Amino acid sequence: MRLRQLATTQSLSFFAFPETHRSILDVCKLSHENKIDSSHVIHWLLEQTCRGNEQLQNLYISQGTDFCNRTTAEWGNAAFLTNIQDRDAYVKALQHAEQQTLEELYGSRTEDTPQEFSSKTNFPQIQTFRVKLDTQRHAAAMNSNIVSSSALEEVEQEREVEFQVEEVREMQRPVHYEALTFPGLHSAIKAFVLTGILSGEDGYEHVFTATSRTSVGRKFGVMGTNSRLFVSAQFMRTVKAGKHGSLDHLLVSRPLHSYASVC
Image (cartoon, rainbow, N blue to C red):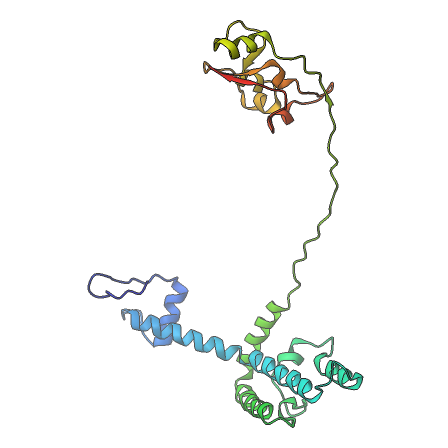
């Protein structure tokens, strides 16, 4: 919502957990007696955003350095698609040493650690980025205990083992049933088609009565009603279900030789 009518026809209320309320008071240096308004909430939100960016600064610097290394290798070995030596040098720059700890990858740099950020390059554009990254790394090292720990936690979440879905395909072969012989239309249905009058009690039955003989019908206690919806006797005799077979599959699709009549 744009809330263009604030203080006229619109109002805004904030709801927060007790921990968030306490954090707002601490950031704004307020006591419990002070009343929190929207300015304090905005102040707290901006402060949290800035802290989050500062805590992830080492991660961003490392990603920026990797970009500089890859770009330098690509520009310095422009013929990597056709020249084997250029290709090997380019691939070597892209590959990272395995079995490194998170501290080695994203931790703060010390004097004993090789300063990959200050290495020279023949490309002024890349060197400008390297100088900025080196300056930011040096500034972040002044508060390395806080910054590094939060950054490591973030990277650790990114490096968690991915969930792999293992699909085990099991082929389900179709069940083949023996088709029953269709004896033809019952005389009661023929008379209904010709005259529109359904008489007698043979050759048809109520649809719910037929459904009641299935496992679903028995489970839910389906029984016939006073409605005038009927199915032919052949509707439930399309295939031979077997001695212990079920007629549930007949309810999925209508058989070819089946007739329903509504009166």
